[in-house]
Image 1 (cartoon, rainbow, N blue to C red):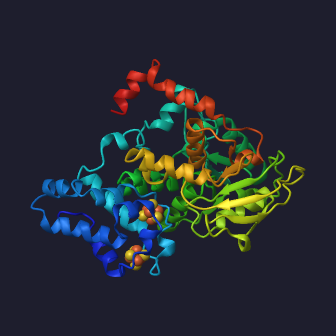
Image 2: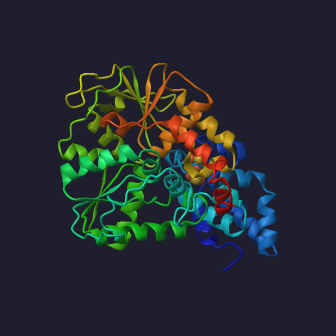
Image 3: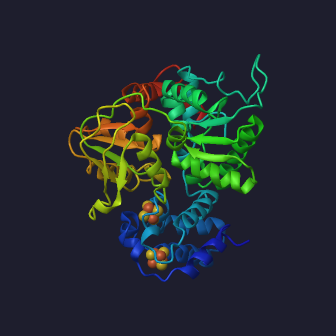
Length: 425
Ligand code: SF4
Ligand code: SF4
């Protein structure tokens, strides 16, 4: 092996890139670095050739500000891939580069120490422990005190790390609905491993997904229902790799298939649906629109912002159909753990997405981490827009971000502060 662990991936990418430059035009990070994706691969290989040792290689890459920007400023949003005639796989390139960056010590520990989601403690499990949030009674496939593991579940519910931590009542309400509609349900209350991938621990992320797949298999469930498109993609890829016959469904599709009727009226005013960047082909967006009772209409797409018009409909018995619906694409700013490298880039990305939402409208997100990101941004820079995850439009319980942010902040200054500082040092 050479000095770079993943040089094969860079050679392969370089061989497929014509340096046409379209990807640069699609991305503010590549524009600021003035590098095409192919030039990222080329630069990594050039530094490897010139370096005499791994320490020397790390120093050369660290001194290459454009390369650092291009690799660490990536949201994994794939906007660039959509402009690439060869559909070159940006995620494969940048995930590999992050693995090399991690092993060369180019990603500082503070960027990832609190999101090692395959360990006992990460920011989500610590938040849950400190604030008494637990689901032991719902995790039926796992043995616990006074409870034997159950292996006859029909469905596994995967809310994802953000929703399980920051919306426990909403999580329980969805769980109860799923059980009512789909039969005996168990809860998978892990993270899908996305933060590990962003930090360059790709294999650890895959191992975590393998653990989840094992749990699903043990539970007997033949279907796993995910709230977030990113979790659904991770599980579909893992279950396929493992050859397990378990269907992966996004929650809206599950609800529609079981004739679910939304429990509340849609908000008044314009709904702005923020498409998840994990929803590459728009399939999850369509499923979400269907569950909400609205229909996407690509024929009215906005060329300037990628926004797509949609036809309002009704949500079950709800009589509060919105006046207009807009769908916009692109990352909310949370992808790729960019905030740990360049917080301003994350903030300006969130601002740019929120700027498409007119006053009085409601931004509706598909991934709970997007909801968190917009809530955080709206707390810092208030606007006259509401911010809701799609589950909040369908169920009674709502996310209370004021309380969540107060509790998150208080964790560090309260009695658990020293423990957290030590665990995440
Ligand atoms: S758009 Fe594709 S082919 Fe063109 S420079 Fe970027 S990666 Fe290379
Ligand atoms: S995936 Fe998104 S952030 Fe990353 S290089 Fe492509 S357009 Fe830029």
